[in-house]
Length: 466
Ligand code: UDX
Image 1 (cartoon, rainbow, N blue to C red):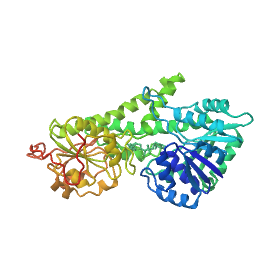
Image 2 (cartoon, rainbow, N blue to C red):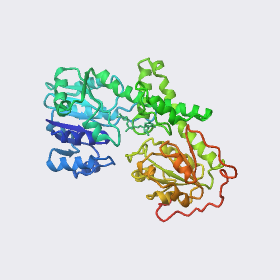
Image 3 (cartoon, helix red, strand yellow):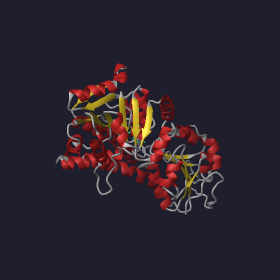
Image 4 (tube, rainbow, N blue to C red):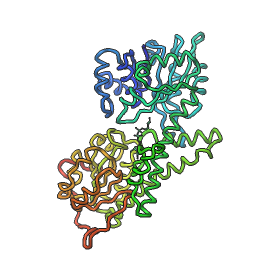
């Protein structure tokens, strides 16, 4: 089939590459010339495992092309996927639909044949209905077009496999024709057994928002339990393991720590709250406000515990921050809990050195204060505290014995509960984590801080921007 993918950000670039890989002829469209040039050359404009190979393979075969022209898109196909962003509005909790509306407004008058527009972006329930009216009002006489909603559930870091082998496909369509066209698009996936939920557009829109709200709730639930563990001496990791054995609960998304961030979960629960208010059912989902608050609190709790470990002040202390992205296997720092913590520590006058395997460029652009170190050992050199904020696999492979010789004081705060506390303690480290009891330190060890703090930046680190 011939199809276009309008918007080649995270969602669109992956969708376009995967649809081409399924065998379709795909034209990706974006207004960002630099992004289009990179994609057309087979280069991924962001870090995502497996995407570069797909782009290279399918641009070479000619099945995947890119353009900045919406006119070219309208001429190329009668099936258009819309994958533009729906960020949080700057003035409220609601989603900003201006990009989706701009695509509909721009595409409608260019259509000369009957067409299907398929939204994949995360939108408030009811959007398909209002966009359908908008589309109809802008079509040329004699041309008909329909909008269906087909939300995407991909996770960053697993985007290619989530797109090609999703847990389910959800399609909200108002006609059998639209439903049939989408079944044809996804036919190779359906043949391999992927579940297909055909429904109305409102339900499809809501599935996505409800799924992200549920995941956010699971994370904030276990983080609330972590606070109770801290107050009672219980252990949140064992608690989560024990809860997870119950198949009705499940262990996934029960990792307590710094909480959720990224371009989806935080803004999606806020947009849901805003939409529910409009629908006069705000009370029904008001618990999501608490989910958001619990999540924000993890960042403060991490900063407070770090300050406590440093004897009550960050001023003049050197802190190594391991991880800047909002989660591992991504270079995305949007609403990153790790960067939010780093920013607070920088503001409290610590000498902060950040390491991240993939996110350093984005982090540097988002937060100019710290030094950024491509080498994790250099980031830890002379540190008074090592803060583990994003659970990259590389950090689990660190040798605590070697690192203890590099730092000024072997203190670790594992805000992701992903490192092995026993191994670090055995190598002489003082280890704390959220929701896990601190062992009583042997007499004569523990809180003593060496006080002369070298301010020089190591050879492999970029000096902080003044
Ligand atoms: C999420 C949804 O999972 C995906 O289905 C949707 O399409 C987009 O939003 P993503 O933002 O890529 O995907 O990340 P995800 O893996 O869901 O993690 C979200 C955040 O939750 C991360 O910051 C992660 O660190 C945090 N998290 C996740 C926890 O704090 N604890 C957990 O147990 C799981």
